[in-house]
Image (tube, rainbow over all chains, first blue to last red; front, side, top):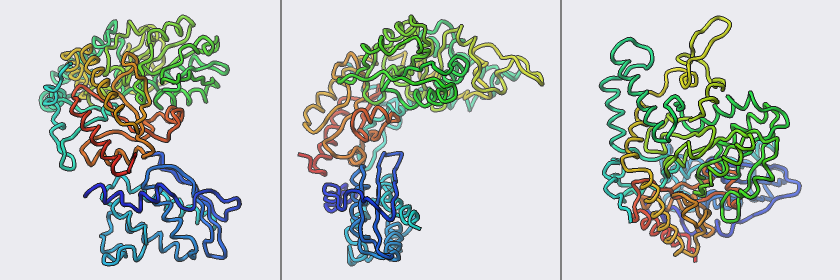
Length: 150
Length: 409
């Protein structure tokens, strides 16, 4: 396992130029997440039109894994319906779960990026178990935000 | 140039390879590795004479008790205590500080009183006082830090008003490595009538500690940072204060007599050691003291100053590195916190780990201090007797690697 497998170009790019940065004035859903151990912090604001996510805004600080995961997530969920977002969460979590065999994650090994897009670059994190929490932070925060809407 | 490289063979874990590379252990400020001399002594206790202490009228218990009390004697001598009864065995520095904060603080602090801490404190010397402040109504005041990461002692006269009843501060920062002028601060605070508590968790393993010279009322430290096992530490206190202070915990072993409506306490230090103590760990700490004394703490300090100086010079070769700590080796120990450009400390630590180098990344249980440094976290490299210039060179090469991966200019 080389370090470059963890720090793929797409991760470094999202870390350097995070997408959908900021906050929303009147979000339909909002949540804050943090990893007390590492100090990674995230706030997430969502706007909905019916059950479709129309706006995502993320603010935070932390390591490249937590911040790039958040940035890629913001792109992945924008424009998606609630059901699609829930599916994304489940697939991402399976990808990050070291208990789940790579063949069971629902990703297509022959077509990298076909299922989760850029997010699949985070697969390398599985080999660095202490960093999995960093990758998951945005997604657990997203789950909290969805709960806040209900 | 002091050469301690022959000591490395005493630490079995240093033979390990990590991700195919030799282990470079630079996280001793979190917890140090243990020499064979400590491991063997602890193993021998369990194998040859282990029994509970201060209880049995049989030989094993007598032998365990003797070894346990001898360990107390070693610790007492190590810090130049007046007698071994001035040394209370605790679970660690955290428990020792809680014992003082609650045992002394709850009886002596009330609304309107002030507790003076510093911006450099570890949570262990901050949160217990916050808890006691909340219950007593006392207020917390903090001595600030100067621009060169030292305690702003010039502010003491102004902050140390008649309401300050306790001054509790670190003997060496676990983040910046700063070594404040402990004796000077202790004298001013005691002359003022305040209780003086020193968190020596780092200091005790990085420099000679003489409690007579420090002039504090209480000094707390842990065994596991000074080559000893976890689960053991000590609180040194002035005899009159230990006599007067209420026990923090009640239970077996700490009593003289127990009636249904109340009890009387065993003599100091036993009244502070409720329950079965960490017997083997205490004896292990005694062995760690033997090990350090054999090297000599003056030499330990000089070795570390040389190594720290070398590390600071090498880090200065990397323009992207920003060190958070005093440059003057007289005022600092071998704990170096730094940032590498805008690369997050956890990313730096992961890359270094792949090179076999163990460093700490985070807020180091000193969030207010990290916040004052203006960063969410730092990378921290810290030294012990077993570290060498080669370790520093490995760190330098690892940081170069991190710069490459993150394309730091």
